[in-house]
Length: 202
Image (cartoon, rainbow, N blue to C red; front, side, top):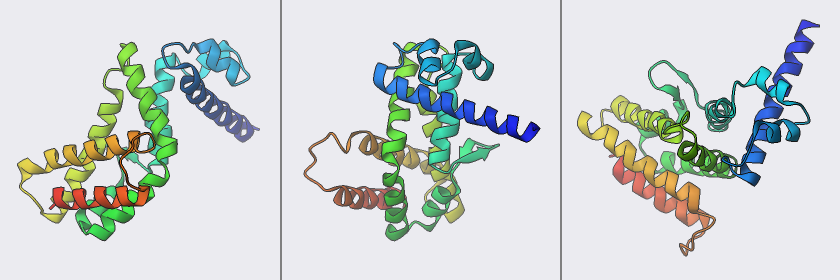
């Protein structure tokens, strides 16, 4: 019986997260209320507050849980979260490994893009959420730095900034590729991005 209750709690929490994301997408973060999210989840504001103290906490959970889950990032005592496959890809450093990682990542852009966009919108209007996405990007930059360190490539003072440049490229492309007229197919775009990463990370 206890296991069933725990499963129901997990299901309700996930439903609130998914309903929050969908409501943020349709109404925008600023216009969405706790009641909107609870209604979309088919529950009440009392239930919402049993799982999340505020709308801000639900937004943090979307970044910390759903975004990290989509990108297979796990908790890290050093950086907050880490993606070991990104660390390994950077350490490998071959164009083939980088291209393969970028292709896998591009497959989940439709899932991660809304969370990042909403996170940035939320940071603008909610004082409890400053630099939410940038903090998360910094964790990914640290993965690149770790991969470079493991491979012994570049000077220590270069590694972090090369990670900044690589993630800035990836973030911009991921957020705009379907709305920009870059005269490239998605495969061509990933090939160009991979070539740029290969240059940056050597």
